[in-house]
Picture (tube, rainbow, N blue to C red):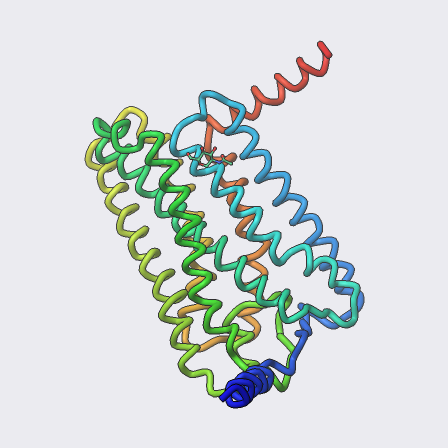
Length: 326
Ligand SMILES: *[C@@H]1O[C@H](CO)[C@@H](O)[C@H](O)[C@H]1NC(C)=O
């Protein structure tokens, strides 16, 4: 009886060992092999990443320090900036450090961590974008009920829901990738790990897992995108029907929101929901998604937004003044 149990246990252990991937690390092929190009790409992405960090931190600091910007829209914007910064920090620093390495290695666990964090931040960003659309919808289409609908608790709830949904989405995606056997090729033709590319390397029939990724990430992005387009269309139609005196300001805020939505969802839909991947375009979109979009968000919001610009000027003045007095 006892021996039987021991036998079963050791049998289980050997099964799980056999299941355990032979692959302990993945190798990124990176963006290009050319040595001269590496230096150029390094500088290019380094500057972009510094811009991402500074730009997004500036938004967070400006919103936090300026009382005029203590409203749901700017709280959500600051949260979006924080998420953008985190999202690009998952991939960009490693990519930049890898430019001068001939062997761009990432451990199996590191790869899973990248996938987890990408989907955690990506999922949260998606919820924040929807919340920002809802906020604008309420402000423009239901202006009298705005303050009752978007009260402080709701805003905190939205942010909590964003992280919760991001976490659930990420865990439900990773659950399928963790158990895949990896035994053969370990070269990822990219500069970071993400599901569609890593799944391809598994030495098993991945048809079902592919479907799961499309059903989860793909459907989620496409549905949210359609929802956002519908809500912004309704908002734009409302503005046209009732030209308020502040409609030009509302309009420029809206175009900024819509641009950010298109920038975020364009690459996302192509990566997760497009059934016919085009190799070179895929890589380009990955670059776009990890360094261009997170930099464009702060630029779009600050350039298109008078209140933001005024607040930043005030922040600068305050800093100079406090520098003189201290
Ligand atoms: C995110 O939103 C919450 C809820 O409105 C707010 O309290 C918090 O300050 C925001 N975070 C940042 C970094 O602005």
